[in-house]
Amino acid sequence: MTKLKKVVVIGGTGLIGSKAVELLQDAGHEAVAASSRNGINAYTREGLEAALAGADAVIDVSNMMSFDKDVITDFFETSSRNLTSAEQAAGVRHHVALSIVNADQLGANPYMAGKVAQEEAVATSGQAYSIVRATQFHEFIETLTGAYAADGAVKVPEIDFQPIAASDVAAALVEAALGEPKNGTIDLAGPERASFESFVRAYLAAKGDGRKVTADAAVDYFGAPVAKGSLVPGEECIKGRITIAEWLKA
Ligand SMILES: NC(=O)c1ccc[n+]([C@@H]2O[C@H](COP(=O)([O-])OP(=O)(O)OC[C@H]3O[C@@H](n4cnc5c(N)ncnc54)[C@H](OP(=O)(O)O)[C@@H]3O)[C@@H](O)[C@H]2O)c1
Image (tube, rainbow, N blue to C red; front, side):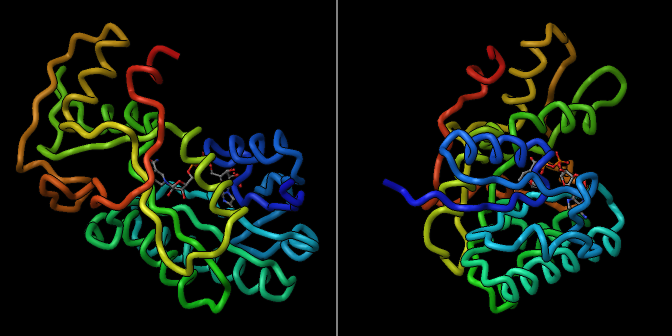
């Protein structure tokens, strides 16, 4: 039988974090849903020492939405440094961070630059770690559709897309956290790869939204120039199970 463990989920009240907390608790582990609202703040260090006492692993799925490169980089870098140093002081075995597939090739996107800073802070911390790089979530397609909508139509980059359900991401993070540190990155993607516009079309059709969707090679990804494979992983990746059709139906 697996030994029950204490796992601290930083961002444990968010989309991915709340699902990770539930999965851990369902399996009998002790899961701490850490968030600044709960008095545990990775950026200021408030409450970290107490939360990490006796923990075996930390899953960091905290988030800040900003398109100011300096703000977002400071958030992810400072939080990751604070967490990994507090983990080392507390004797935590494993730090797991959630990043984004190909973030390092998309640095012209300010948010991606922040994720790269997070990855570097973790990898150079001296703490044992695994970085899980996921593709875009099914749950994020609504935001993407809104961002690319104009004049009653939606025009997206002409690229491949392989989105994944948040529950599959949470399950992969929990499995990673309970396992051995990779001291490297793991790519994680959804079960199906197709054009970006086909996923947006499926999403809009399910909502009964008749807006026209087109793809244009000149459209970028929030400031980053993109090509066909920019948002999808290579051959070696873990795949989620839930298709967009199943997710939309649910
Ligand atoms: N969207 C995508 O398609 C996608 C794809 C791949 C990877 N990701 C990554 O997935 C991660 C999680 O995203 P999500 O959508 O689950 O985020 P979310 O729903 O916005 O949740 C963010 C969580 O972070 C917590 N938080 C914010 N600042 C904090 C701080 N200083 N200390 C502690 N907790 C803090 C928030 O709680 P409080 O407000 O109470 O602090 C909340 O629990 C992000 O790192 C993102 O980069 C996203």
